[in-house]
Length: 314
Image (tube, rainbow, N blue to C red; front, side):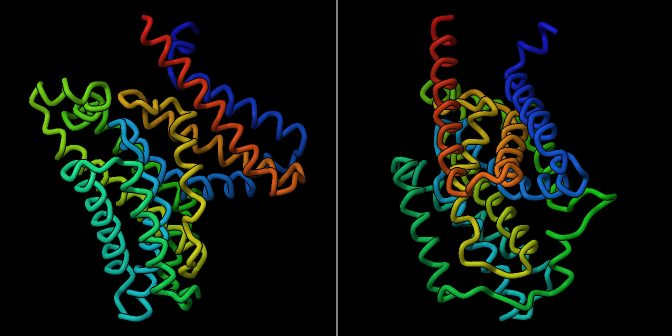
């Protein structure tokens, strides 16, 4: 038992279990299989983006453009199928490639030009958001192929497809962070960038790769959401930045870098998904959702600061 409580993720896991129990007792409909599948499916979209955000935070950076990268990737994928008559598989590959390219642009600005990550991704996010409106004129892209819709609406052995993709990406990232030189380099850069450079780690290249992966995963989340909605919506991803950062932070990822895990982010994303779903089931006004999420963020940041102080003393 002591070993369990020593784990970084134990707190968020207990919090998630407690929240689920409270909601199940207050609203029994929360615990039925249909609602659980909704929660898991909805969590997977932002959770996918949160995985990429976790990598960025581990290096001590931040990516405020992920939501708009996801939205733009969804629009480009939709237009590739409807306007260019590309097969869904090719269109999805193109959308993912576009997301990775946008991430590389962020990474190069930060690692090579040495522009602050906050400023870089804030500005690029505005560019991507404006591009969405310029391309679509504010109107959704409709008439997407039925085969493409399976990605966001289908199931595999009863498990929603977005959750399957989320789980696979999570497992791959968890393995990479825990068992490869790339993962060790990420933690080293976040822990002490100067020391990592002295140790021979190619900090600039690793930083660029991290933002590439962040853009790729954001695009993946945006494409899955587009598939779920059966249309390319100009508003896709507009409100994803705060939830994905929150999921990583409450999952134990430090804002100062060098500390965090994929498991913690997955649990944090589930916590945020359950919280949002619980607000609906408890008949709480949706206007309160942003206030509640903001309070959760404040609490998570305070916990992160206290954890950092304790680590510094030790």
